[in-house]
Figure 1: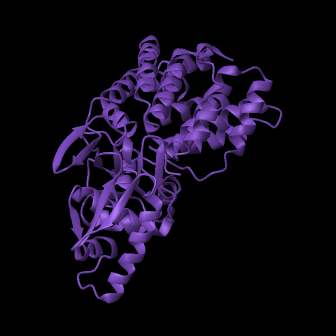
Figure 2: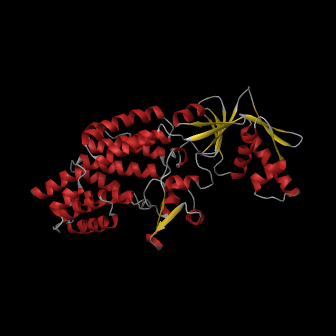
Length: 406
């Protein structure tokens, strides 16, 4: 490795892409192309970064497996930054094995971090936890250690373990200070600030209270019957009933929780659950069927009593009922939460993260664009979607798998 390549590598590790480009911008040999691509990625020019990486990968011969593996890791990181999440994880997994076989432990750990961060974006929290568990942060340089702790903190936040998240963020801050990379310090500061921002609103017996993440965690671990409109389900403590895939039952549960300790008129329930303003006998018959299904589902936690004008939720053992609602209204709150991270998402990546069909996501994006809540860049396969940052509160509870849903 020549001195310019080594100096450019040190500049990139310190978060100085312009310093790296000063040393290798005019060179076209494969190592210089790879470093130029990383510098361009750090500057946000991801299409150029990807093109340079492909040139570098072709430039390295088949006998240079280690260099090719490093290029695969860099391509995976660019794909992560551009929210290109649809590719196969197999090339990255093979690159990890190659890096470990050549004793390049730092890049192997970096590759594992990239894989774990991709899983976090997709809401696959159990798989992300498995990927992060074997990482030895003590063996990582400060920059990677900070990223690893940030990933652990995000996993803890989206699993609603705020105490674990705070500890990971303290370690991330210490590592970022050692690394002296401004972007990392800013990311850690933003993650720490999210802990103190409003995360949801609690509605109970006509009163409203704004909750932070730690307060939501305490509420969900209490003996209160919580109907959760953030992740669409209900439960008491460890008992959880997911309703994300049963929208009619969730609409009924939400209406009953919002009216507790009172009852809800049958006509109002029909309007909420079936989206009609002109109910007839078929709707009333269907309401009885759906109430029966909901009654059976929540039987261990609460009862549903028929009243003269409708139905009322009757929690057992003197239990309270609380409705937890997200900080932003609307059916597309989770979609907006994903788009507000500042990255440009493709519809395919959004569909993967939300567990929805691409066509469903496209229809939702068209509606949000009509109301100026999102905007698009590019066309056809290159089209990407953005939203303005959502300030003043945290969207953790709206991200995929933020709470148990199965």
